[in-house]
Image (spheres, rainbow, N blue to C red):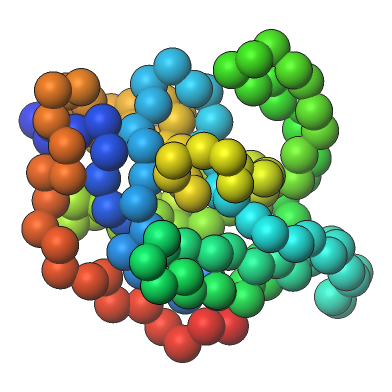
Length: 150
C-alpha cells in the first residue's frame, strides 16, 4: 500500500471540471460525504439525463461566482451535524488536492452559514490522505489550472 499524505484540517482544492480553482475546504473525517455550497439550483433535462445548473460563490474579500453545470448522480438523504435529515442532489466531479486528482461524489447544499464552502468527507479522504487537526493549509497556494467554465 502506498504511503498516505498527511494534510491539515483545512486546505485549498480545485474542482476543475466545474471551473473552480483555489476553493477553501474543511477536511472532515467525521462526515461521510462531501458537500459544496451552492447559491441556486435548477434541474433540467439534457439527452434524457437530469442535469443540474448551479452557482458556487467563493472568497470573502472578493467574491467569485462560478456558474456550473453537472450531470445529476442521484438524490440521497443526508443527516447533517445537527441530526437533521434532508434530501440532496449529488454530482460526481474530479477534485484536485495535494498533487492528486480523483473523482468524488459531492452533495449540493446551502453552506452559507459555514466557514468553508466545501467540506471534504471521509469517503474522499480514505486511502489517500490522513488529517492532522494540528495542521492547516499544508499545500502551496499555487492556483490549480482549470478549464474554462462550462
